[in-house]
Amino acid sequence: MNFAKRAKSGGEVFINLTSLIDVVLNLIIFFVLSTTFINPTGLKIELPRSAVEETVGPGEEVVVVVTRENEILMDGEAFSPEALLDKLSDIRETNPEGTIVIQADEKSAHGAVVSVMDAAKRAGFEKLSIATKKER
Image (tube, rainbow, N blue to C red; front, side, top):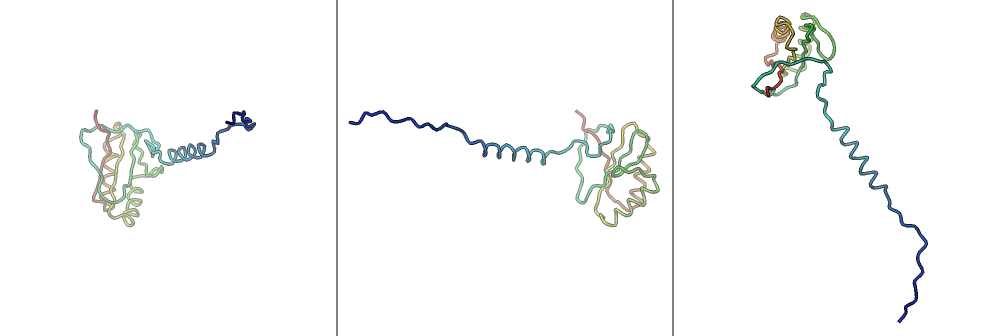
């Protein structure tokens, strides 16, 4: 029997972290790209509360915001009711099945919301929705 001692290898043991770093980097990229933002308009409006929750039908949504100061905004640009009518008429030509979604602050004047509704109807939109927060 050969009981001679084996020579120990002089090399160091190491762990290859390259594949682990690749996986972690891919996870970080996935989570950054798949993150959704809570308030895409970036405006601070307090929506009124409602117990009913409805979904919007087919077609693209056109979001019109009415602020606390009764400003009418769409895509971050302020509009007068007459200018809003022109803009909605242009959108109606490219998006005939679209839905107007009004995000009005609960402290905004009723007249400002009605002027947006009137402009949407005069532009030819048949579907109108008013955004609310669900009651708890």
